[in-house]
Length: 172
Image 1 (cartoon, rainbow, N blue to C red):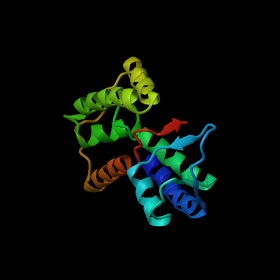
Image 2: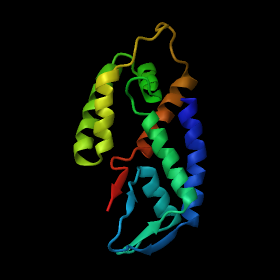
Image 3: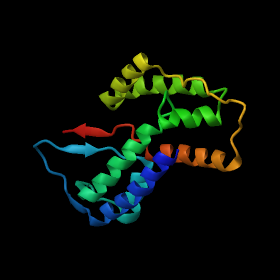
Image 4: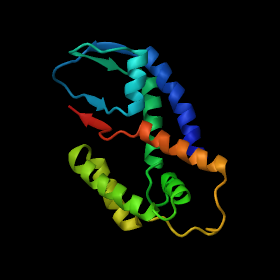
């Protein structure tokens, strides 16, 4: 969990600085536009830093903010609780008896979200069919997590919830 938490520690300030450098502009009609999806944290930071965006306007995210958004998106991908991703390791350590069930539910959720929000989730779900959803057996299952590692695991799960974007990209 050190990698995702370190990534978050770098991406979060970049997002905050990026929102400070961003501009509120009128929504343009016509052309091709890339719309970035919002995580809970992006919604909160936008409200705190930019404020309420009037109807017909949108935030034109500064490149530093885009880097922060992208860093958080990659962090949330890594924290998905499946297979060999860091999220899979964390869930296996925190909930060893339930980790396979959690991974199957997340896999099904990826399929549903792929049909509803973003095709990339469906592609990830398909990839997981080939590599497997479940975490491999733990080498030393008799060694329990200490309280500090347990708290860090819960912190990583909170970061996942705050940074996850159901519909990351839309092109109009």
